[in-house]
Image 1 (cartoon, one colour):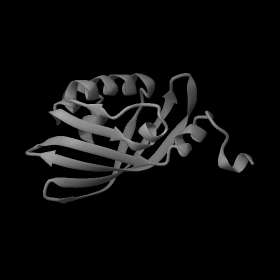
Image 2 (cartoon, one colour; image 1 turned 120 degrees about the vertical axis):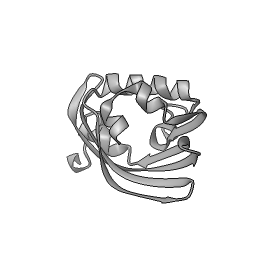
Image 3 (cartoon, one colour; image 1 turned 30 degrees about the vertical axis):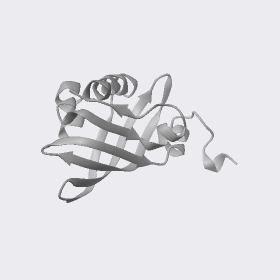
Length: 128
């Protein structure tokens, strides 16, 4: 979380193995992105993410591990996404597999509709 909050893409990307796998499940399922493979691809995605949501932040809710597998519950916040302006507050979970002290595999889960409605990209559920 500290590395993510620093927005230092080099610092964050060094946490991953060279051949790391990263899947943002809602974005992949909706066809907006493909899973990322390799530290360089993850780094490029980080650059784009921080350009799109310059005030991106995370709050750690909980974390647990069972050896080489870690589950992290988080709240992501931010306000500006591309040309849309709105306040994001998204609860999510990351399932992480470690290889030594590096991240080898990540799958992130959260509801994709909520951030889209918070930014005004789709109607909110209470809009009828």
